[in-house]
Image (cartoon, rainbow, N blue to C red; front, side):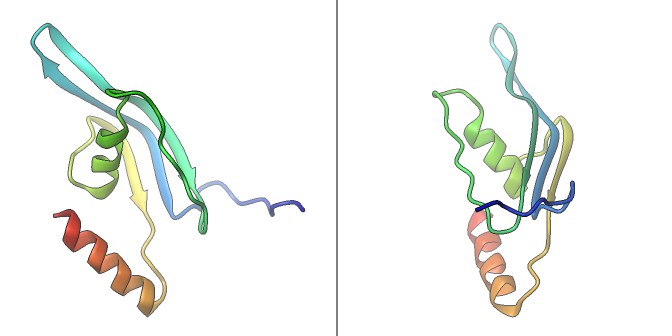
Length: 95
């Protein structure tokens, strides 16, 4: 079974050139360095990696809790009433 091709930019979530650096005691620490991810409608994504790999920082930028130093985060708006209600619950908890 093949998956239909999706047009670029058709995903509900898009991370492009995402970077985040923090000040460290011995100089800057690159927590996230140039992430490019497109997550289409209906897809599930897992972020795996060791401690300090930037997983939580990436999620915080995706949720709008942390501003990226560079790059863009785009999250499509839900289209149905049920999804809008679910979206509202998610955003309220994140704040």
